[in-house]
Image (tube, rainbow over all chains, first blue to last red):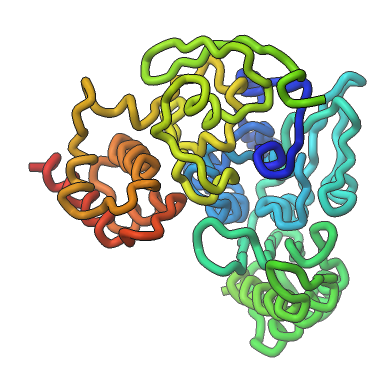
Length: 251
Length: 163
């Protein structure tokens, strides 16, 4: 609607999906340990309750979206359709290796997150296709989301990060928002951390290592100067966010 | 092609318990625009047109939303409540009276949005904490009264209803 209200966009055809029930539903599959969330489930549903229990980082990200009014209307389908690098939920989908289920005139297809977002507001959706739902794993281990902005409510991220620690596999994944044309998955920093230390249950971490992890994460960011912030500040932000999230994940 | 030439849609919105046919509307119109310009309900205010200010807040299917961000044609089959539908027979609700008593109204532009948001808050949570009040009103911006008096108004209602 913002495109219509402020940028002169004039849609000629509108397909209303509000009444398509299956897009507004979510489910938990205990045998597969996955959660599948319909593209029209609002953030207000993810903030608390069972989804928050199963995918806490997603709940945290949902809680930072806009205001209560926005969270009552905003959805993962909206974040994925728009595909802004500042989309609050997107670093979570990246860090969790989400699978996006698409549906369109040619049928359905599933694509992994890393093949979905192609650039600033560019995604793999074909004409006539839309996001049906999103599947994320239920991971045993700490996960969290952190965001920097000019105030707490109603803010578009200056920088954001999601860190997921898979305690069973001894892996950590980290993804960054608002510091590049797409969500940035810091695979080099992840690999370095894996080589340097054990991340299994009971693992501990020293402060120097967390700082070095933050520095390496920040090296993988490709931020720009724009009306919202500067590249230098964004680099600084993601280093601090990564460092904090890592420490929290092992606390 | 101009916006007017794009279509002459007819659909029905249910607002404040009444059905309102919307005729000759362009399909891309926001709920805010349709409420104000087509249905004669100017209570919800238009300011930022991008969901940041909350002055267009209405309740849709028991959720407070920014009507500027809802496509009106997509609101078919929902129950919409605007500030006009809160008081009975044009009288002020206890929340509106408390805003007056606490001095929570100055220029008044943001007030309908706040009133709707507070109604929604107290309907879903009759005894919110200060933090819960602040968070639930975090999507409504007031640039003259200040939030202290608005918070005070909400607390007056909570204590009156609890008494």
